[in-house]
Length: 96
Image 1 (cartoon, one colour):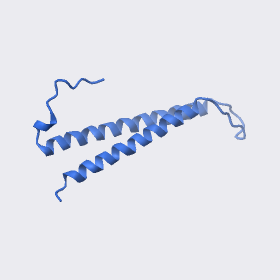
Image 2 (spheres, helix red, strand yellow):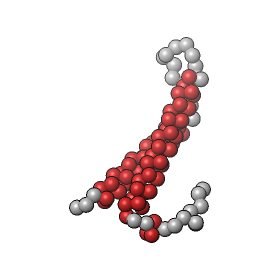
Image 3 (cartoon, one colour):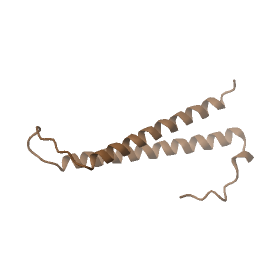
Image 4 (cartoon, one colour):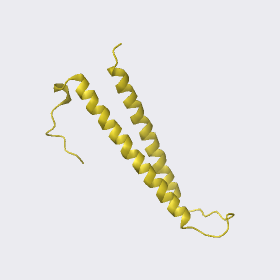
């Protein structure tokens, strides 16, 4: 975990500077979530490819896929909330 103890408070910065820093951080978090979602998708595909070969009629149920799906859904919800926060931040920067 990062230690922000030595970081100067955002209140001491200009509004536009602090908004830009926050927006950059939100975009960075969204990018990290996107990467995690791609890794989960790749792992799920790998699990599927490692299953039974031959017939397309066979479906293999395992206990790993639901965990991947749950993690992916949680990340997707988090990404949506971060996107909403980024939009709200952008709207708050526009003069009324």
